[in-house]
Length: 276
Image 1 (cartoon, rainbow, N blue to C red):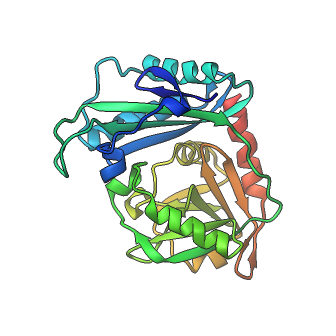
Image 2: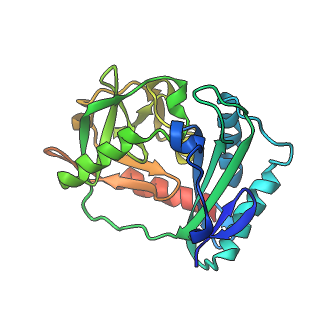
């Protein structure tokens, strides 16, 4: 039986009850972190913790005094252990405001839920993308947060699945590239690696941040956080996606453009060396 951590208490999944007044359900008034763990070793733990703390502050949630890095780590490890996970696992840590109120909450106090599961990452020899144009991401700081407002990502995922693409690329109201459905995006052109700036509306990804730091410390490549037009996908030598679960995923095709995978492979080795 799967055990779910509900505000520090471990419960069998069939005993977890969600109130009809739950603010994550009614208003999307919640944020979450998706983490990767190897047994009880949580990758980039501090980065995830400080991102969720920053997000709670931005959304004016009341952070409990006991919500420390050690508490964050202990509750995740407790949940992994309770579920007997021995290998690589996916962790979702969701924080939401307590029940009550309409758009104006009755309280800013928070609750949390931790879910864990064995992680199985599909291996792709071909990874094709396409731009999703039906709806757009709003540029700005609110879009940098991992909130529960993900209807756009859901619809874009369905679009990709219906058309046999492995992922969709989201654009903002300026028609600039923002990110993939579940990942940040990087383009390589000669010795320049570009990624959408946070001001374009992309999620402030943990692996995105790590790669920018790593690339900035080398002399081989220049890293640019900037606005990127869709036509630049056709001009790039290489395109890859990043998130905390797959780390780095090479894209092999966009329309009639086939990409190299050399730079992504080298960066993947550097990143994994840092993890280990």
